[in-house]
Amino acid sequence: MKTFYITKLIKKVVIILLLCDTLFLLTGCWDRREINDIAIILNTGIDYKDEKEIELSVEIVMPEEMSGKIMEGGGGGGVRTTFVESATGVTMADARSKLQEKVARFLIWGHAEVTVIGEKLAEQGIREHIDFFARLPEARLRNHIFVSKGTAKDLISSLPHLEDSSSDTLKELAQFQIGMEVTMKDLLQMLKSEAGGVALPMVETVPFKQEKGKMEDKTQMKLSGTAVFKDDKMIGSLDSEVTRGLLWLRDEIQYATVTVDVPVGEGKISSEMIRAQTDLIPSIENDTWKMTVKVEVEDDIIQNASNLDLRNPEFIKMIEKELEKTIEERIKKAVDKAQKEMKVDIFTFNTSFQREYKKKWQTAKENWDVIFPKIEIVYEIKVHVLRPGSTTTPPTVPEKEVKEE
Image: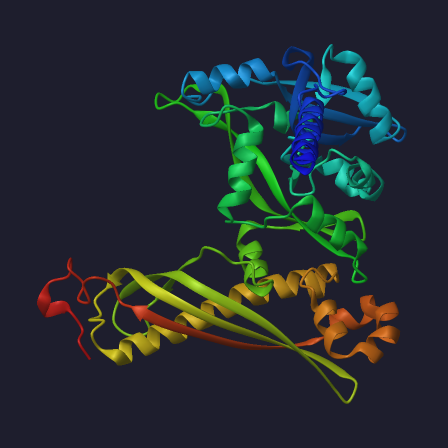
C-alpha cells in the first residue's frame, strides 16, 4: 500500500516538472522585433565614390508591403513595392552604420538575395568590401553576385517591366542559368584560389519600349557577358558569345542551342542540348604542361531548315561533326581571350593540376602566371544526336527537293 502512494507521488512530481518546463517555452523571444519596426533588405549595391569612400545602396521593402502583395495574389510587374536608400563611408561597415541612421526602422540583412558590384569599384578592387559580407553573421552566402555596367545604384534603382523589383529580376536571371551563376560563397572561394582568377556575370539595363514606340520609366535587365578579375581587380570582360564557351569549359553549361550549316545540300539545322559533361585531364610531358578538354554532348534536333532527310544516318553523322566543330570554336574563343590576352586562369586549370601533380604544384603555383599562358590545349569534343525530331523529312520542302542520300 505504501509503495502505491509513493509511486503516485512520484508521478505527480514528474507532471509538475513537465508543466514547469512547458512554461519556459511559452515565454517570448528576448530579442524579437515588431513587424512595423523592421525594414527588409532585398538587394545590395556597392559603388566607388572616390579615393576615400564607397557608396552602399540597398533595395528595401517594408514587411507590410510584402504581406499586402501576398494578400492581393502577387504583383503584376512594374508596380513598385520597394525603395532604394544609399549612404557613403570609408568602409562597408561605416557605410552600413550611416545607412541605418537614415532609415527609421531596423535593417534586416538576412533576406538579401543579390549583391551588385559597380563596374568602377570592380576595377579598383573588391576584396576588402567582400570581407564585410563574409563576417556579417546575418549575411547569406547563397546570395547571387553580379557586376553592373555603370553604377550598381542605378541598376538596383531601376523599375523592371516584368517583376516588381530589381532583386526579383536579378534572381531570375541567375537561376535561369543562361550565363554564369556565382554566389557569395563561390566568390569567396575564387578570391582564395592560388590561381588568382575570378569570373563574375555582368548585367546591364536597357530602356523598355512600348508597342507605340514611346519610352517608359521601366527598364529591361539583361546579362551582358562576364567580368574577369586578376586577383581582386577587374581587368576586362567577355561578351555573351565568349561566355558560352567559358561555360562549356567550366562544365557549367545548362542550356545551349547550336545552329550549323549542313555539310551537303542547303540550309541550316539547329540542335538543343539535353545534357553535357566536360572533363579536364591534365598532363605534364617533358616539362610541357598540357590540358585535354574532353566534352560529351547529347542533343536533339529542334529545327531542320535544310533539304536533308534525317532518316539517313550518314547525314546525322555529318551533322554531329559540324556540331563538334562549332562547340570547339566556342571554347577556343574563351581560351584565347583568357589565356592569350588576359593571361588569367578562370577555367580552374590550377585545381586539376594540383589534384593530379601534388608535388610539382607546390613549386609551380608560385609561377602559375607564367605557366598558364603556355599550357597546350587539346580538344576532344563528341556530340551524339539522340533524336532527329518528330518528323525526319523537312515538312516545308517539296518532296522532289528533299535530299535522301
